[in-house]
Length: 92
Picture: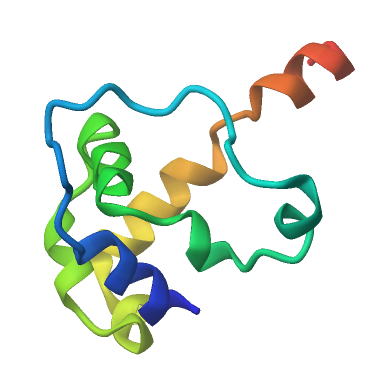
């Protein structure tokens, strides 16, 4: 799964200046059976950049990530983020 996500992220972006999608354009029937890698794209790298994560990790094989200090630091930071809807709905 991680390898397929990396491949999706490495594909060429057709229009780099294109506005990011704001709405899901997938059919709800196919959305329920979609795999995580189908949501990854070259624009996914922007998340790493906005969170100031090193993107060189994306060049390494996913099987080596657990031993990578950069990966572990990013993983720890991501664990502290709250999902907006969960935060709003649960009042935390």
